[in-house]
Amino acid sequence: MCGAILSDRNQMDGREIILEKIRLKRGVTPYGILPDADYTARKQELDGADFWSKPKELLEKQLCPFYSTGACSVWKYRDHLCATYFCSSIGGASGKRLWKAVDRYLKMMQIILERHSMIRAGWPVYEIFPDDLNAGDIAMEDENGNVSDANYRRIWGDWVGKEEEFYLLCYKYFRETEPESFRQFAGLGGEILESCVIEAHRHFLKNVLPDQMRLSPDLTTEEAGPGRLVLRSDLTSYEVPVLLMPLIKGFDGLRSTKEVFNLGYDVLYNMDQLVDGLLSHDLLIKVNKSQK
Ligand code: SF4
Image (cartoon, rainbow, N blue to C red; front, side):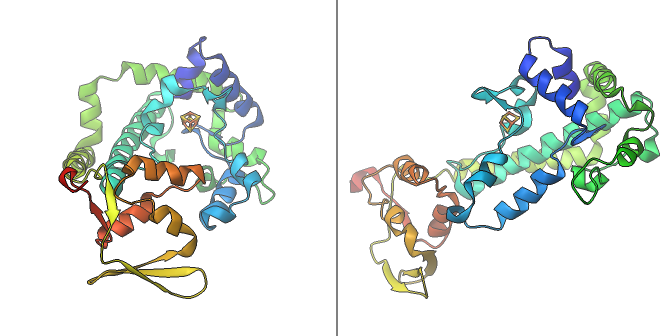
């Protein structure tokens, strides 16, 4: 991807961002530009916090570095992986499983093509990291979060100072790769991931969320400790934060599923997991057109 953007003079914003990263060396590796140690540390902190307690400054710092003037500056070349990221899916959990399978398949393709280009560029095969990796895996930064020159030299070898040239060369090799060769490189692992995508897609088509849903008519609630409620029906129960009850009640059989999700987005809450939980416990049911 880096080589593609660097070679395209119409991609000025994306190009400038990559060149600046190369200048600062942060996250810059022969495997592409990776999230740096600061990003990874912030992500761990955010992943461990409830959505309403995530500090705004921390969230803002996580904005993708390629986001520029209201749009993605590298979309022309980075659409493949980012397009598989969905905050929520019309297929609920099945939809997320499908996009995860597509994401794994595309990542596998990217890794194979990257490594193949590295080998063609003369990189010693035994030095190539075989799996997906982040900057932490190859210890780019020292304990203070600064890129260590020694580590950077160890990672880049003779290509230090010629990173742009290296990315451009890899892109040239990528363009020369025939689809048949790719199948051969991907081998059995590629076939397995491809079948996972096909199976996940089949499952997804059977599990698209209903357009309209309502809470089970026999649903009752009961307190379950500070700030928590248990939703019960005859056969099942599911615990939720009290704060989410106004959103849950949005499933009144009149609003569409999309409208209820939008109520959640209005307060920066993604109802995806909540809805999966309610559905899997039969606490949400489909509204048939004849019931309206
Ligand atoms: S689409 Fe991907 S690369 Fe582009 S700004 Fe968003 S997260 Fe970044």
